[in-house]
Amino acid sequence: MKKLFASLRKRRFLRDFMAEQFASEAAQFLAELNAIHPFREGNGRTQLSFLTIVADQAGHVLDLERLDPEAILQATIRSFAGDEKTLARLILGLIEA
Image 1 (spheres, helix red, strand yellow):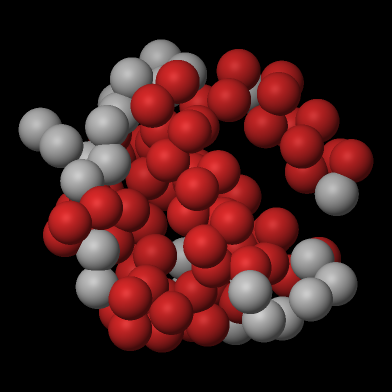
Image 2 (image 1 turned 120 degrees about the horizontal axis):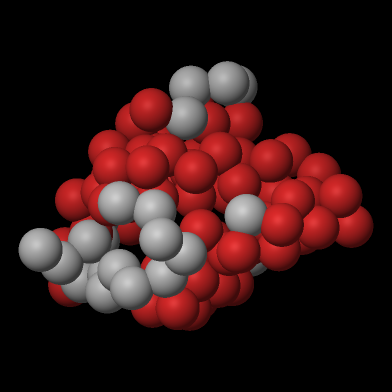
């Protein structure tokens, strides 16, 4: 976890990334976090809260009203198996234009 968060810090918490790159990098970060986190249940709300703060600080407001909990769950499961594109698309869809 120290390496993962150090990498996020080194990339300035994804600041100055355009929406598509932000979504891709955020999906990669969340997939890695999910893979190394010791607890399987209950991560979603905390990770979403963290993602919302990171997005806001990076200049991307997330519209959580558009969030489909089942879709994000399935995308997270797929990202754990190596497919981060679905999660990135969902994150991109939450970014307000």
